[in-house]
Amino acid sequence: MNIQTQTFRGYGKTKEITAQTAVECRFGGEVETVLTAHAHAVLTGADAGNGEVRYYGKAHFSIVYEDAEKHVCRAEKGVEFSAAAKDESVYPALTAKAVVAVENVSVRREGASVFLTALLGTDISLYGEESFDYLSGGDIVMKRAAVKVLSAHLCGGAAEAEDEFETEPLGDILQHSETVSVTDVVCETGLVKAEGEINLGVLALKQDNSLTSFERLVPFRVEIPCDAASFGCDVEVRVSVADVSIHAEEEDGKCNIYARFTLVSEGCVYEETALDGVLDAFSTECETELAYFDGAFCGAGEFKRVTERVSGKAILAGSVNFADTLEAVTLQRSEAELVTTPEGKRAEGVANATLLVKTEGDYRAVEISLPFSVVVEAGDAEAHVMVCGMSARQKQEGEIDAEATVKILLREKKQYTVRLVSGVKEGEKFKESDSAISVYIPKAGDGLWELAKRLKKAPEDVEMSNPDIEFPVKEGQRVIIYRKKAI
Image 1 (tube, rainbow, N blue to C red):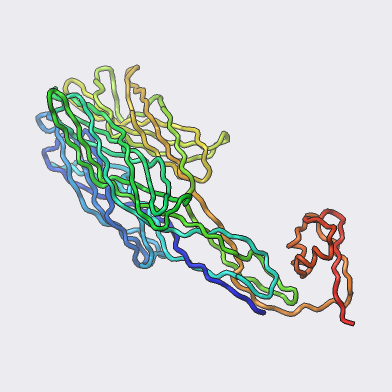
Image 2 (cartoon, helix red, strand yellow; image 1 turned 90 degrees about the vertical axis):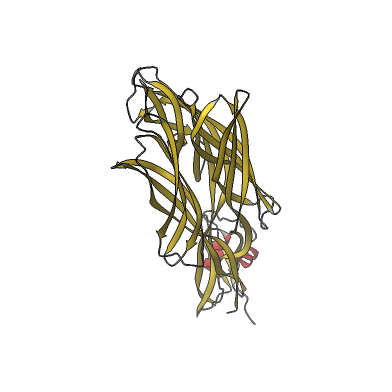
């Protein structure tokens, strides 16, 4: 039996793994009471090895605190870190792309020192070469189809974004935080373009030594060169803030805030190829044993955006009363996941923030959480949430009414499952029938291919012998097979 095969060679995502690590930072004895604690992590690299992915970077810690004289102060430190994500299937030829996020920040005091611990969650995607053989021809009956496969092309780059705005006069900028949301990604010839917003949150000390907080939505645009990019390609892009420079300048009784952001972007363009593959095959002369390639190719689908204003009673991690003055809402953050309900998909999560209150000249922080559930239209997708514009009021003593704007980005996942004939093993020869004509009673619903395979005849021969039959066949129909006989 003469059989031909071809080999597909591509590059794609082979595996996704997650990891956690804790990074700790120490502040000195000048810290009397910590009011707010923030951490931001930036990865500088990730390398695949034997059975592990080692990733490394720097965590930036900042605190706002009161000293022994009740002065509100600030402090910042950076800590380099390195960690490993274990997985036996990892080998050095793979390319590792990692995204890190601060999942939690905890504060503890030991003696005269204060320690901040940031729990970092890291999502790692591994990319490598993919190849497989598939049947392409031969003296065998084949069921052919155009089968879609994907190849991944990695790309990345850096960009900057700037913003300038005016505020009331300030005494000092104490702390800032940034959240990035990518709102749109398109491919052009040789270029990937991404747009989005940076939610800049600022906690500041006013000239009368009271606290205030404000935020800005800063638009950004990133262009990433990629030779494989073309109009209509599927693409995914992640953008993170690598560095921020922010300062205030006063002039003529006004305060101008200048912010500059260094952005790092990593993307993946998915190239779609249609293979002329074989889904099934059989021989009209002998038994055959087929071998198959089974694979799955992951890609990226469409972006969908949902914006909703949510409100309700906040969950408090401390107590408040009418003697408290609510001064600032800072360090807004959110987490959410997609859940399936009888009414459809919903994004369910919680918007968190730190509420700073003042009582008889003393500050303290109360963590507040506002649960939300938003109806979304999504299939298999990832949900990324950014919370902004969060406010808090105390209408009833001991209770906080909170409002926030929740911006949900849904990134659809795309996956192709492929099953192709990759090889054929020849078996015993069929015994030829002595009859010139055979009549078969097929099962109702049989298609032409299934019937031809059962009869061990080429589909075109079955159709030629039965020109009046439509497929799939109906109950009670007869199929006739003619055999040429030598005289």
